[in-house]
Amino acid sequence: MRNIILVFISLLLFNSPQFYSQITLQVGGGLGYISPAGDYSGSTVDFYNGTKYGMNSGFNLHAKARVGLLGLNLFGIIDYSTISGDGKSEPGQGTIENSHSIFSLKAGPEFNLSIPLSPVGVYFDGFVSVNTFSGKVKFQGVAQVPSGDYDIKSETRFGVGAGGGVLLDILPVVTLDFGIHYNLYNLFGQSYTSIVTINPKRVDAYTSLNDDKDPAYGIDNDIFIVDDSRSINAWQFTITAMIGI
Image (cartoon, one colour):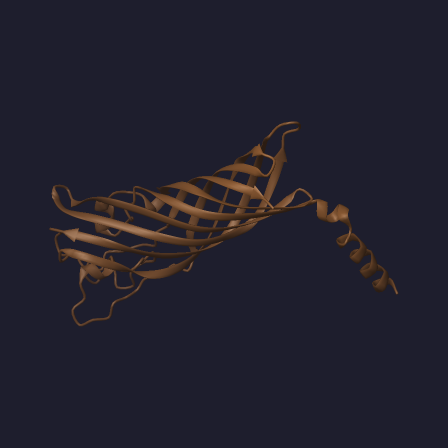
């Protein structure tokens, strides 16, 4: 009998106009700027030596949805980013052009702080992410690496992130969302793709993401160059136009 009463009360609550009036839904899209951090930054000399990725900066396109209930929001983002770096392989020698594309799915909770009688609000959030990397690298006149364009094998990593932002209501159903977030793209799933051949080449180290240590490191340091795991982290600055539904 008690269970029946609880179910009855729940049905009354979820079907009441007051409950639905407290649910909000926003969808939108926007642009962003990405600044690499940790091992994702550095120079192309670092990339050539297998210590960092040598990325400079990049841009982002994304779609976002936000569901709000009783002061707590849940959000989801579909995110496409491009990031690149270029420069010398060694001082005064050779050139490298390195680029990544990152397709991400992100979701998590969002906590809002409203300013009374103001169109401005503040939020803090955290999320988990699934990130798929692909890309290209070009070598020209680089020692121990044949010149040419090479595809980087597509691979997926799992990550987390956190940040916050400012919400600005500009129309009754339109909000501008200014966000800043720190992304740890490869917190889980790091690996090294070993190319098993009779005659291994240094270029094999660059044609996969290879964010874990090369298990063959120490055999020949001119070929097997990645001696430690590498983090793929970045700051992301976004502006998103959100429309209430």
